[in-house]
Picture (tube, rainbow, N blue to C red):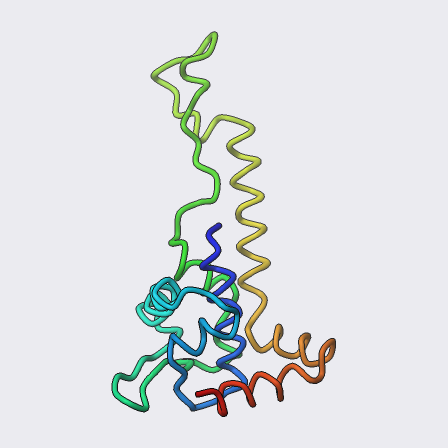
Length: 157
């Protein structure tokens, strides 16, 4: 998984505290000392996926396009990484002893099946967790984070 997923997850969480205020890619990137151009690429992917909305102009930037209850961790991962399975079976069994070009090993290989099952479990877990859930957990564990983040984005130059 690319580092862009981590950046996107944190950006969505941070935007949840800011509310309706638009935050620029520059400010979101500066919060973690990340490159603005690459952060903007992640934010654009989130916008294309309908997770964020963007506004241009002097008061422009990014904001959440959906409620935090309607944005799952899987939504964010898929927006950044795409829908491809994490494991891709290249059917190496086809070239091993007893292999056959007639068999689709993506469906018959036990290892491929185990990896698909794990991928499904992982995706299911991410689909069950929303930004609202993560925000609640962060606010319980680190009560100062919400106010510090809000203060940073609303008062940063």
